[in-house]
Image (cartoon, rainbow, N blue to C red; front, side, top):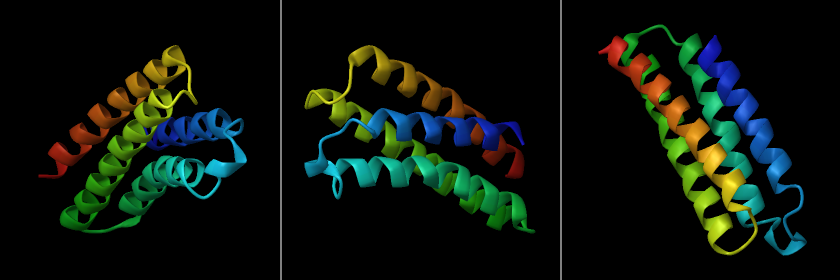
Length: 110
């Protein structure tokens, strides 16, 4: 499923971006952004395995929310000087495209 593949690749990019975060962020930003990024493909997978349209749609909505959450963490990380603006903008753009794709799936299930 292309949308899952894109989400999975983005989660890996976020993971690599956060490797250089300070140890003081291990239980804060590092953990939060990795969890939200990995939640997107996880919820897409869960949606794929569900039987009813309503159930599928619910998990796609959760995946979309996790995408927005990840964008927020990226903006915060840039704001406090952990991430370079160009890297952040690139990832936010990729998440915008992913969220657009998830929205199309949600609309097709309505």
